Amino acid sequence: MADNSSVQSVERTFDIIENLSSAPQGLTLLELSSDVGLPKSTVHRLLSTLTGRGYITQEPESKKYLLTLKLFEVSSRSLAGFDILSAARPYLQHLSRITNEAVHLVVREGHEVVYIYKEDSSKNTVRMASHIGLHNPMYCTGVGKAIMAYLPRSEQEQIWKATEIIPYTDKTITDYDLMLKELDHIKECGYAIDDEEHENDVCCAACPIFDYTNMPYAAISISAPRSRMDNDRMEHRIIPELLTATRRISGIMGCPEHS
Image (cartoon, rainbow, N blue to C red):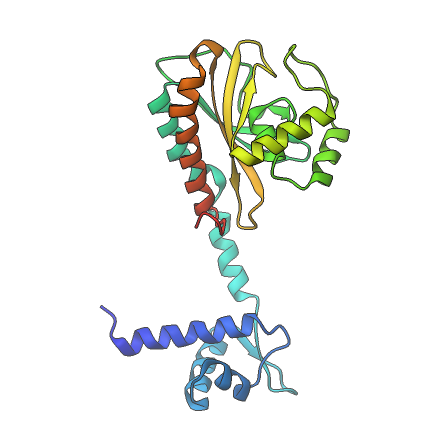
């Protein structure tokens, strides 16, 4: 167990790093000492350690201390081993297990969504066109609409204009004004419904996953035949579980509203 002096040194070190991160032009020893409320001798000792390890550098002329890119390099190595799939997989498996339905994870790619994971139920399988690597438009899929709803209006318009609007079924929304109303409703309630809009007899509920900038980065859906997705089951079983899972994954991804 670390003693109090060791913990205090760590806290003081991070105080210095965080202050320097807010000063891209650098800070002098006196300025840093004043900002963190520590004696110059203490700050100088910690700066010497950080400089020796390559996290801080000192400009020869101004004598100001600046952060180097080493912190970025360290965090980048961490991010390289972390992705949305590793964060989401336990929740996808849980959703499939408790609902006995197919669960999908997609990420946005331009004006489309791409399926990066599919968890089929062993009990209630349904024949669907979805598969890993599949690209689908946003406007007619639950996952696509869930992402699209939280984008700025100008970006929604760009996606619509860049997409070939095809009536996949007689329930596909092909009118832009109706789509805007649909997206506003989705943003208001927090989830999207694909009511046989892309495939006949296939209904799904979907919720977005937000990244550290609070923007929709991915989405999860639960899909089943229309006969198994009645309003009562959707409202009391499917949607609450989806909302819980996507909120937790968003928190893992660094979303400030879900951390």
